[in-house]
Amino acid sequence: MEKIKTIAVLTSGGDAPGMNACIRAITRSAIYEGCRVFGVYRGYEGLMNGEFKEFTSSSVSNTIQRGGTILKTARSKEFMTDEGKKKAFDQLKAHGVDALIVIGGNGSLTGARDFAKIYDIPVIGVPGTIDNDLYGTDLTIGYDTALNTIVDCVDKIRDTATSHDRIFFIEVMGRDAGFLAQNSAIASGAEAAIIPEDQTNVDQLAQFIGRGMRKSKNSSIVLVSESREGGLGGALYYAERVRKEYPQYDVRVTILGHLQRGGTPTASDRILASRLGYAAIEALAEGQRNIMVGVDDDKIVYVPLTRAVKQNKPIDKELINVLSVLSI
Ligand code: F6P
Image 1 (cartoon, rainbow, N blue to C red):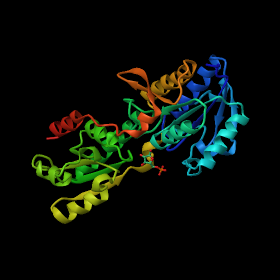
Image 2 (cartoon, rainbow, N blue to C red):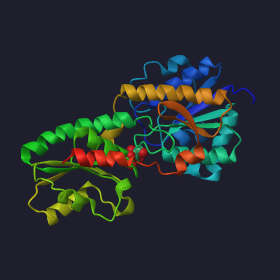
Image 3 (cartoon, rainbow, N blue to C red):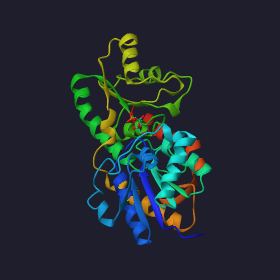
Protein backbone atom coordinates (compact mmCIF):
# COMPACT_ATOMS: atom_id res chain seq x y z
CA MET A 1 0.00 0.00 0.00
CA GLU A 2 1.19 3.48 -0.78
CA LYS A 3 2.06 5.45 2.32
CA ILE A 4 -0.60 7.83 3.53
CA LYS A 5 0.78 11.36 3.60
CA THR A 6 -2.18 13.59 4.36
CA ILE A 7 -5.20 12.90 6.51
CA ALA A 8 -8.34 14.87 7.25
CA VAL A 9 -10.30 14.63 10.50
CA LEU A 10 -13.79 15.83 11.29
CA THR A 11 -16.38 15.54 14.06
CA SER A 12 -19.98 14.95 13.10
CA GLY A 13 -23.41 14.59 14.73
CA GLY A 14 -23.96 15.37 18.40
CA ASP A 15 -20.87 16.68 20.19
CA ALA A 16 -19.49 14.47 22.95
CA PRO A 17 -17.01 15.25 25.75
CA GLY A 18 -13.65 13.81 24.78
CA MET A 19 -13.90 14.63 21.09
CA ASN A 20 -11.16 17.25 21.54
CA ALA A 21 -8.90 14.74 23.26
CA CYS A 22 -9.41 12.50 20.24
CA ILE A 23 -8.69 15.26 17.69
CA ARG A 24 -5.54 16.00 19.66
CA ALA A 25 -4.47 12.34 19.64
CA ILE A 26 -5.13 11.98 15.91
CA THR A 27 -3.26 15.18 15.09
CA ARG A 28 -0.20 14.38 17.15
CA SER A 29 -0.05 10.69 16.21
CA ALA A 30 -0.31 11.59 12.53
CA ILE A 31 2.40 14.22 12.78
CA TYR A 32 4.56 11.70 14.62
CA GLU A 33 4.08 9.34 11.65
CA GLY A 34 5.20 12.12 9.29
CA CYS A 35 1.72 12.98 7.93
CA ARG A 36 0.07 16.32 7.31
CA VAL A 37 -3.27 16.82 9.07
CA PHE A 38 -6.25 18.90 8.03
CA GLY A 39 -8.96 19.68 10.55
CA VAL A 40 -12.30 19.93 8.75
CA TYR A 41 -14.85 22.25 10.37
CA ARG A 42 -18.59 21.61 10.83
CA GLY A 43 -18.60 17.90 10.00
CA TYR A 44 -19.70 16.76 6.55
CA GLU A 45 -21.04 20.27 5.82
CA GLY A 46 -17.53 21.68 6.07
CA LEU A 47 -16.14 18.73 4.13
CA MET A 48 -18.43 19.52 1.18
CA ASN A 49 -17.75 23.27 1.43
CA GLY A 50 -13.98 23.05 1.80
CA GLU A 51 -13.68 24.30 5.40
CA PHE A 52 -10.21 22.79 5.85
CA LYS A 53 -7.43 24.07 8.08
CA GLU A 54 -3.99 22.56 8.39
CA PHE A 55 -3.26 21.56 11.99
CA THR A 56 0.08 21.60 13.75
CA SER A 57 0.84 20.07 17.10
CA SER A 58 0.08 23.39 18.81
CA SER A 59 -3.34 23.65 17.12
CA VAL A 60 -4.51 21.08 19.65
CA SER A 61 -2.68 22.41 22.71
CA ASN A 62 -4.78 23.01 25.79
CA THR A 63 -7.78 21.12 24.40
CA ILE A 64 -7.70 17.74 26.16
CA GLN A 65 -9.81 19.05 29.07
CA ARG A 66 -12.39 20.91 26.97
CA GLY A 67 -15.90 19.63 26.23
CA GLY A 68 -17.60 20.10 22.86
CA THR A 69 -15.49 19.98 19.71
CA ILE A 70 -12.99 22.58 18.53
CA LEU A 71 -13.79 21.44 14.98
CA LYS A 72 -17.49 22.21 15.51
CA THR A 73 -20.05 19.75 14.30
CA ALA A 74 -23.23 19.46 12.27
CA ARG A 75 -25.85 17.03 11.03
CA SER A 76 -25.85 17.11 7.23
CA LYS A 77 -28.71 16.10 4.97
CA GLU A 78 -26.82 17.08 1.81
CA PHE A 79 -24.02 14.61 2.51
CA MET A 80 -26.57 11.80 2.29
CA THR A 81 -27.08 12.58 -1.40
CA ASP A 82 -24.79 11.41 -4.22
CA GLU A 83 -24.06 15.03 -5.16
CA GLY A 84 -23.06 15.82 -1.56
CA LYS A 85 -20.67 12.89 -1.41
CA LYS A 86 -19.12 13.89 -4.72
CA LYS A 87 -18.55 17.43 -3.45
CA ALA A 88 -16.86 15.99 -0.37
CA PHE A 89 -14.62 13.71 -2.41
CA ASP A 90 -13.65 16.57 -4.74
CA GLN A 91 -12.64 18.67 -1.72
CA LEU A 92 -10.53 15.85 -0.31
CA LYS A 93 -8.75 15.45 -3.65
CA ALA A 94 -8.29 19.22 -4.02
CA HIS A 95 -6.54 19.29 -0.63
CA GLY A 96 -4.41 16.24 -1.44
CA VAL A 97 -5.99 14.20 1.35
CA ASP A 98 -5.51 10.45 1.12
CA ALA A 99 -7.42 9.25 4.21
CA LEU A 100 -10.41 10.51 6.17
CA ILE A 101 -11.12 10.04 9.89
CA VAL A 102 -14.66 10.63 11.15
CA ILE A 103 -15.36 10.98 14.87
CA GLY A 104 -19.06 10.56 15.53
CA GLY A 105 -22.02 8.39 16.40
CA ASN A 106 -24.28 6.04 14.53
CA GLY A 107 -25.58 8.50 11.93
CA SER A 108 -22.12 9.92 11.24
CA LEU A 109 -20.48 6.53 10.83
CA THR A 110 -23.35 5.43 8.58
CA GLY A 111 -22.42 8.42 6.40
CA ALA A 112 -18.78 7.30 6.53
CA ARG A 113 -19.74 3.75 5.55
CA ASP A 114 -21.79 4.95 2.57
CA PHE A 115 -19.04 7.31 1.42
CA ALA A 116 -16.45 4.52 1.65
CA LYS A 117 -18.65 2.29 -0.51
CA ILE A 118 -18.56 4.76 -3.41
CA TYR A 119 -15.15 6.42 -3.24
CA ASP A 120 -11.73 4.83 -3.19
CA ILE A 121 -10.27 6.51 -0.12
CA PRO A 122 -9.54 4.87 3.24
CA VAL A 123 -12.05 5.95 5.87
CA ILE A 124 -11.65 5.28 9.59
CA GLY A 125 -14.48 5.81 12.06
CA VAL A 126 -13.96 6.67 15.72
CA PRO A 127 -16.95 6.12 18.05
CA GLY A 128 -17.80 9.51 19.56
CA THR A 129 -21.27 9.75 21.08
CA ILE A 130 -22.78 9.91 24.54
CA ASP A 131 -25.27 7.22 23.47
CA ASN A 132 -22.76 4.30 23.55
CA ASP A 133 -24.81 2.66 20.78
CA LEU A 134 -22.12 1.55 18.32
CA TYR A 135 -21.79 -2.17 17.82
CA GLY A 136 -18.40 -3.81 18.35
CA THR A 137 -17.02 -1.39 20.93
CA ASP A 138 -17.66 -1.61 24.66
CA LEU A 139 -17.46 2.16 24.99
CA THR A 140 -17.85 5.33 22.97
CA ILE A 141 -16.18 8.67 23.65
CA GLY A 142 -18.40 10.89 25.81
CA TYR A 143 -20.53 8.15 27.33
CA ASP A 144 -18.69 8.04 30.66
CA THR A 145 -18.82 11.82 31.08
CA ALA A 146 -22.54 11.93 30.28
CA LEU A 147 -23.18 9.09 32.68
CA ASN A 148 -21.37 10.96 35.47
CA THR A 149 -23.25 14.16 34.66
CA ILE A 150 -26.57 12.33 34.90
CA VAL A 151 -25.62 10.71 38.20
CA ASP A 152 -24.69 14.12 39.65
CA CYS A 153 -28.09 15.46 38.62
CA VAL A 154 -29.99 12.47 39.99
CA ASP A 155 -28.17 12.77 43.33
CA LYS A 156 -29.43 16.35 43.58
CA ILE A 157 -32.96 15.50 42.52
CA ARG A 158 -33.07 12.73 45.10
CA ASP A 159 -32.74 15.31 47.88
CA THR A 160 -36.02 16.85 46.78
CA ALA A 161 -37.66 13.51 46.06
CA THR A 162 -36.87 12.35 49.58
CA SER A 163 -37.78 15.61 51.30
CA HIS A 164 -41.18 15.76 49.58
CA ASP A 165 -41.95 12.03 49.29
CA ARG A 166 -42.25 12.26 45.52
CA ILE A 167 -41.80 10.06 42.49
CA PHE A 168 -39.49 11.63 39.91
CA PHE A 169 -39.38 10.52 36.30
CA ILE A 170 -36.05 11.68 34.91
CA GLU A 171 -35.68 11.52 31.15
CA VAL A 172 -32.21 11.02 29.73
CA MET A 173 -30.73 10.94 26.24
CA GLY A 174 -29.44 7.92 24.33
CA ARG A 175 -31.53 8.12 21.17
CA ASP A 176 -32.84 4.54 20.85
CA ALA A 177 -30.35 3.00 23.25
CA GLY A 178 -30.90 2.58 26.99
CA PHE A 179 -27.26 2.48 28.19
CA LEU A 180 -27.38 5.93 29.78
CA ALA A 181 -30.74 5.28 31.47
CA GLN A 182 -29.90 1.78 32.70
CA ASN A 183 -26.42 2.47 34.02
CA SER A 184 -27.22 5.87 35.53
CA ALA A 185 -30.11 4.14 37.34
CA ILE A 186 -27.70 1.58 38.80
CA ALA A 187 -25.10 4.21 39.68
CA SER A 188 -27.55 6.56 41.36
CA GLY A 189 -29.45 3.88 43.25
CA ALA A 190 -32.65 4.63 41.35
CA GLU A 191 -35.71 2.44 41.77
CA ALA A 192 -36.22 1.63 38.09
CA ALA A 193 -35.21 2.34 34.50
CA ILE A 194 -37.52 2.30 31.52
CA ILE A 195 -35.47 1.41 28.44
CA PRO A 196 -36.23 0.25 24.90
CA GLU A 197 -34.11 -2.90 25.19
CA ASP A 198 -36.26 -4.29 28.00
CA GLN A 199 -39.52 -4.50 26.13
CA THR A 200 -41.80 -7.29 27.09
CA ASN A 201 -45.57 -7.52 27.00
CA VAL A 202 -45.51 -6.28 30.55
CA ASP A 203 -46.19 -2.60 30.93
CA GLN A 204 -43.02 -1.18 32.52
CA LEU A 205 -44.90 1.32 34.66
CA ALA A 206 -47.35 -1.24 36.01
CA GLN A 207 -44.41 -3.52 36.69
CA PHE A 208 -42.59 -0.83 38.65
CA ILE A 209 -45.65 0.08 40.73
CA GLY A 210 -46.56 -3.60 41.13
CA ARG A 211 -43.09 -4.49 42.40
CA GLY A 212 -44.08 -2.71 45.55
CA MET A 213 -43.03 0.83 44.89
CA ARG A 214 -43.49 2.78 48.09
CA LYS A 215 -44.22 -0.23 50.23
CA SER A 216 -40.95 0.39 51.96
CA LYS A 217 -39.96 3.73 50.44
CA ASN A 218 -41.56 7.11 50.43
CA SER A 219 -39.86 8.44 47.31
CA SER A 220 -38.75 7.00 44.02
CA ILE A 221 -36.55 7.85 41.10
CA VAL A 222 -37.23 6.31 37.69
CA LEU A 223 -34.79 6.89 34.84
CA VAL A 224 -36.62 7.00 31.52
CA SER A 225 -34.91 6.61 28.19
CA GLU A 226 -35.88 9.29 25.67
CA SER A 227 -36.52 6.56 23.08
CA ARG A 228 -40.08 6.13 21.86
CA GLU A 229 -39.28 2.77 20.19
CA GLY A 230 -41.91 0.08 20.38
CA GLY A 231 -44.50 2.39 21.88
CA LEU A 232 -42.41 3.44 24.89
CA GLY A 233 -43.37 6.80 26.31
CA GLY A 234 -41.09 9.49 27.68
CA ALA A 235 -41.00 10.84 31.25
CA LEU A 236 -44.01 13.11 30.71
CA TYR A 237 -46.09 10.19 29.47
CA TYR A 238 -45.35 8.07 32.56
CA ALA A 239 -45.91 10.97 34.96
CA GLU A 240 -49.28 11.64 33.35
CA ARG A 241 -50.25 8.02 33.70
CA VAL A 242 -49.30 7.96 37.39
CA ARG A 243 -51.41 11.09 37.95
CA LYS A 244 -54.39 9.35 36.35
CA GLU A 245 -53.94 5.75 37.44
CA TYR A 246 -52.28 6.17 40.84
CA PRO A 247 -53.43 9.60 42.04
CA GLN A 248 -52.22 8.94 45.58
CA TYR A 249 -48.64 9.61 44.43
CA ASP A 250 -47.04 13.04 44.09
CA VAL A 251 -45.14 12.97 40.82
CA ARG A 252 -42.67 15.26 39.05
CA VAL A 253 -40.68 15.18 35.80
CA THR A 254 -37.16 16.35 34.95
CA ILE A 255 -35.90 16.20 31.38
CA LEU A 256 -32.14 16.57 31.57
CA GLY A 257 -31.68 17.52 27.89
CA HIS A 258 -28.48 18.90 26.44
CA LEU A 259 -26.70 19.46 29.71
CA GLN A 260 -25.87 15.75 29.39
CA ARG A 261 -23.67 16.49 26.36
CA GLY A 262 -21.55 19.27 27.84
CA GLY A 263 -18.74 19.64 30.29
CA THR A 264 -15.21 18.59 30.95
CA PRO A 265 -14.52 15.00 29.89
CA THR A 266 -13.80 12.50 32.65
CA ALA A 267 -10.35 10.94 32.91
CA SER A 268 -11.79 7.72 31.44
CA ASP A 269 -13.12 9.56 28.39
CA ARG A 270 -9.83 11.41 27.88
CA ILE A 271 -7.90 8.14 28.02
CA LEU A 272 -10.36 6.34 25.73
CA ALA A 273 -10.29 9.24 23.25
CA SER A 274 -6.49 9.35 23.28
CA ARG A 275 -6.21 5.58 22.75
CA LEU A 276 -8.77 5.56 19.94
CA GLY A 277 -7.23 8.59 18.20
CA TYR A 278 -3.80 6.95 18.32
CA ALA A 279 -5.35 3.66 17.13
CA ALA A 280 -6.98 5.37 14.14
CA ILE A 281 -3.56 6.44 12.87
CA GLU A 282 -2.04 3.04 13.64
CA ALA A 283 -4.87 1.43 11.67
CA LEU A 284 -4.12 3.61 8.65
CA ALA A 285 -0.41 2.84 8.94
CA GLU A 286 -1.29 -0.86 8.89
CA GLY A 287 -3.30 -0.40 5.70
CA GLN A 288 -6.73 -0.71 7.32
CA ARG A 289 -9.67 0.99 5.65
CA ASN A 290 -13.38 1.35 6.18
CA ILE A 291 -13.29 0.21 9.78
CA MET A 292 -14.19 1.72 13.14
CA VAL A 293 -11.62 1.53 15.91
CA GLY A 294 -13.13 0.41 19.20
CA VAL A 295 -12.35 -1.28 22.50
CA ASP A 296 -13.39 -4.78 23.43
CA ASP A 297 -12.37 -6.06 26.83
CA ASP A 298 -9.95 -3.13 27.09
CA LYS A 299 -8.15 -4.11 23.86
CA ILE A 300 -8.22 -2.07 20.67
CA VAL A 301 -10.27 -3.72 17.93
CA TYR A 302 -11.09 -2.94 14.32
CA VAL A 303 -14.76 -3.33 13.44
CA PRO A 304 -15.92 -3.08 9.80
CA LEU A 305 -17.97 0.10 9.45
CA THR A 306 -20.77 -1.97 7.97
CA ARG A 307 -21.06 -3.96 11.22
CA ALA A 308 -20.54 -1.05 13.62
CA VAL A 309 -23.60 0.83 12.42
CA LYS A 310 -25.89 -1.90 11.25
CA GLN A 311 -26.53 -4.00 14.27
CA ASN A 312 -28.26 -3.03 17.45
CA LYS A 313 -25.78 -3.17 20.29
CA PRO A 314 -27.40 -5.29 23.00
CA ILE A 315 -27.60 -4.34 26.66
CA ASP A 316 -26.32 -7.03 28.98
CA LYS A 317 -29.41 -8.50 30.68
CA GLU A 318 -27.38 -8.81 33.85
CA LEU A 319 -27.56 -5.01 34.20
CA ILE A 320 -31.34 -5.22 34.21
CA ASN A 321 -31.25 -7.87 36.94
CA VAL A 322 -28.73 -5.90 39.01
CA LEU A 323 -31.00 -2.86 39.07
CA SER A 324 -34.10 -4.86 39.79
CA VAL A 325 -32.54 -6.78 42.70
CA LEU A 326 -30.76 -3.79 44.24
CA SER A 327 -33.74 -1.44 44.11
CA ILE A 328 -36.08 -3.40 46.38
O1 F6P B 1 -26.64 11.26 19.59
C1 F6P B 1 -26.45 12.12 20.65
C2 F6P B 1 -27.76 12.76 21.06
O2 F6P B 1 -27.51 13.61 22.18
C3 F6P B 1 -28.90 11.78 21.38
O3 F6P B 1 -28.79 11.23 22.66
C4 F6P B 1 -30.09 12.68 21.19
O4 F6P B 1 -31.23 11.91 20.85
C5 F6P B 1 -29.69 13.56 20.05
O5 F6P B 1 -28.27 13.55 20.01
C6 F6P B 1 -30.15 14.99 20.16
O6 F6P B 1 -29.75 15.65 19.02
P1 F6P B 1 -29.77 17.23 18.83
O7 F6P B 1 -28.69 17.83 19.68
O8 F6P B 1 -29.51 17.42 17.37
O9 F6P B 1 -31.12 17.69 19.26
